[in-house]
Every structure is written in C-alpha cells, then in structure tokens.
Amino acid sequence: MGSFVRTSAGKRLSRRLVRPAGAWRAAGADPVALPDFVRALEALALTHGPFEAAIGHSLGAAALGLAMRRGVRLGRVVFVSPPSSISEHAHNFARLLGITPRIREAMRHRIERRYGVRFAEIDRIADLEQLHMPSLFVHDSDDAEIPFEHSLRLLERMPGARLIKTYGLGHYRILRNPAVVGAVVDFVRGNVGDTAGRIARPAAPGADLLKRRFTDNNVGV
Image 1 (cartoon, rainbow, N blue to C red):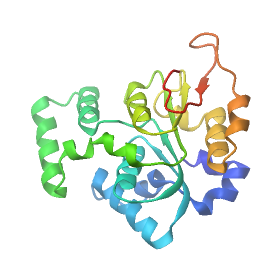
Image 2 (image 1 turned 135 degrees about the vertical axis):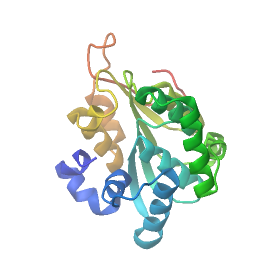
Image 3 (image 1 turned 90 degrees about the horizontal axis):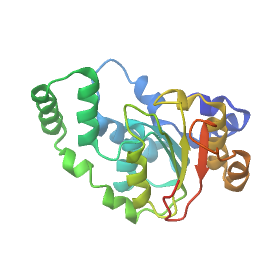
C-alpha cells in the first residue's frame, strides 16, 4: 500500500488519506479479524477524520465497505481486489491452504462467537446501494485469491462506481504496478478525466496490463 504514497502526488495527499491495511500490519502480534479492522477504521474516523479518501486492499477493502455501511463517511473510496462475500472468501482461502471443511467451519464459528457477528450479516452487500460517493474498483482478471467476479458483484451495488480491470498482476503485484498506482492516485485527487484517457484499452486480454471503463451503473468491461 505504500506505493500509493510514494508518488509525489501521494505524499501531498497522505495526511488526508486513510490506508487501513498498513495500520493493521503494525498493530502487533495478537490475532485480528475483519471486525477488528472495522473498529480501527471507526476509531480513526472519530479521532482523525473526516478523511477525504480511503484505499483498501483485499480484506482491507471489505473492512472499508462494512465501515461505510456502519456510518463512516469518506469523500471517495478505492477498493482494490475486494471480496464481495466473506463466506465465499473463507471457502476459497481454506481451499488454497488445504484446510478441511470441518476446520474451516470451526474457524467461522469461533470468529462469529468472539465478535458477536455472523458472516451472513457481513455479506449483506445490498446495503451498499444506500451509499453515494465517488468509488473506484481495481481488480485483476487472474486474481487466484479473490476472483474478479467479486468486484463485478460489488460494482452493481454501488451507484456510479467505476472499474479498472487489470491483466497478469494477480492479487499482490497490482499494488505495485506504476500504472495502477498512478490511476488510483489520480482518482483520489479527483482527476478522473485525466486517468481515463491515459491508459489505452487493450485489443485482447494480455495485450496490456490495464483495461479500463468508467461506468455509471454500467458494468460492461
């Protein structure tokens, strides 16, 4: 996530920008889960907000969405490789690590008991339809951890949201790609028109790393 701040424009924005993922990594060795991330965001908004923008990756993006549903207000928001369903993400995570269904379900029950919130409640993405703010989704077509379709589902729920689809960057390299970083920083600065014209749409998948289409309630990519 530091790539977004190391640009010259990002440095000027950093004091007005919340980047939740970096803060969570520095939180210590105690185990944390999505509800902890949401509480951290709510605390930051209360003590240091309001924030002009927020950028979240993976579960950080999910935490942003849930925090916004719970009342955190932002000027604009960027979701990078977000899951649309924590339940589905847990299944995929377990599959990638070879965790058995019995252990996976035990983990889910333990988290739900610890935080007093069910995964089904977290997965109520229909609530996002009540949010109206400039929003950008960035997701790679080859993401093995959180498939691209997750962003499409969320995009349908976010009025006026925009989408950048990338190729060949996966789940983590997308955070360090200069074109992605530049596009996200431009979006945060409000320069939507400039970024839309700077990245060419590839003739076919793999012809370029980025494929962009800014949409207004239109999901075609």
